[in-house]
Length: 262
Length: 268
Image 1 (cartoon, rainbow over the protein chains, first blue to last red):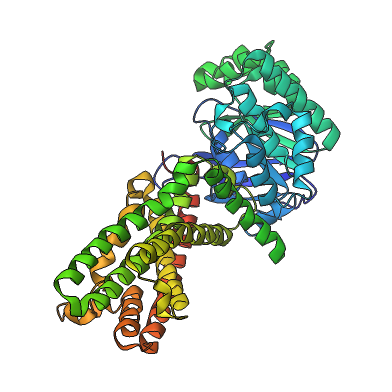
Image 2 (tube, one colour):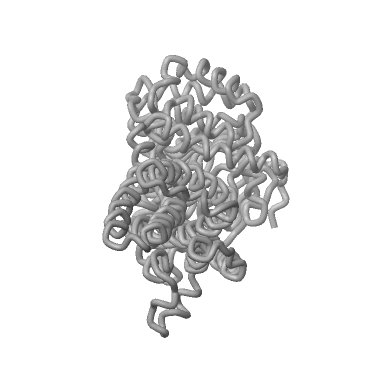
């Protein structure tokens, strides 16, 4: 039974099977994301990151387990939580024919944002979108679309932000700008952020804690520095490869148990 | 959660569609294209009939043109609802919509409101043109026309909800139903002829269709000058049953889509 109502997100035993006889996409996932922290979900394709985020957002019904988002049980009271959460993903589009301002206005209304015009101007200024407000969303570059998606995800000043690969398909400069912006925003707003990413440098830079997923299971977890130390590596990419290829951590490699496991 | 908050969310989704129409005059034009075209074609048919059989000219004009225009109310209501939903699917925007605090029934309310706006934008020009070209004013049916419109709109929404539920269940494969399904009901809706013309075994089927009662009511007004309250009551009673069934189906398929993870991939 999870009781940590003060956590931004408290997850216990979260499991998803798309088919009763099929392999589970996520198995027995448990964690507690503190308010104001940024945590990462790390894993390869098919590891269960997107499935996990979809369940946390109420888009997908779990097969088992429980989610408390901002103190609300997502199984019974998800709309109260969703009003204080938001989400961004490069794989979910905003209507292309609507202008940036119109798109943001739609979501300002959906989230019941007071003084929506003022909020949109504020976000546009912060995310350097002022000159883009009247342009159709479909005519923007990948970097501009990412900033618009970020503005959409912040329109309601969320207490919990879920980001699915926030810098995918961005050039290094734009990616760095987004990461800096997210760091600053979290520090200023106290918003908790859970991000799923393939980008090890991003996870290393932004996240206080990392959950490493493989085949739907958490196979390791810890701060980026703790993972680097445990695996005896210089960067998270090498740690990721050790985990993905089941080479084990430094101690397991030393005593040969990792090869036996693999 | 207050009604004002719910209203704001409904307006948010409506605003999304209205902004789309503001930016695209072909979409606005398309709304009136088919109703006007249907009315023009049937207007000429009526004029031809009037030429060969003068004694039935005014009755034929009323029954045929009234039927055409009122049937468009149901068709445009159904298509307005279903296509507004499909706009979300096509723009791959459902993931954002369904992680907002918008409740499923608020989504339905927004689609109903958009459907009504689209229907009026499409049918009212055709009504005006019928008067200008053929001297047929739909309003000559009297205030009961409001009930005819309401009955046919409700049936359109019920069918559209069922179509939307099928799109949630079957994805892109069910999209063509948004355009075709109500045309398939035309023979049973008794748009241009009374239910009694149908074979005996088909009549009970037709009498389960709300529109059949509306059109019986319309013919009652045009031919006898009387309002068939029994038919109108049957139309609204059936509409409530159809709507209840369609809402239940929609909510069930929405929940099933959440269990399958289809809300993110629908339309792909």
